[in-house]
Image (cartoon, rainbow, N blue to C red; front, side, top):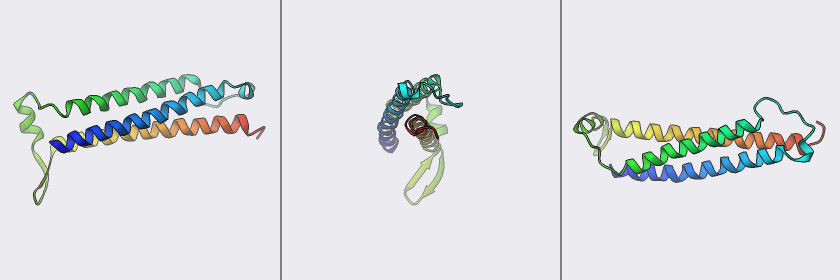
Length: 139
């Protein structure tokens, strides 16, 4: 049970770092799109200010979910049925035992990190495209 606490806290720190990078690039993209050099350019689909706002809010929401998981992982479960169901061994190798609860928790945490990584990639790609169009000239 101690391993999930450590993993959840490490994932929370990584999630905060990914969210910070995403928020910085979203802000830079919105500010760059508002520059006078970009005023005459028409933006394609996916480069509106509202999209960056939604991406920022989704990033904050995912970090909040990871934070709740990190805080709740250190508290013991309240019901006995939780212990019976989630402590069922899924995989055993020598003295290591992987339970259903661990599989669920790790898969949720890794999925949330994947979502943050995709959002970070989208914000960086959009910022780079805006810079290319605005500073790249008439190409």
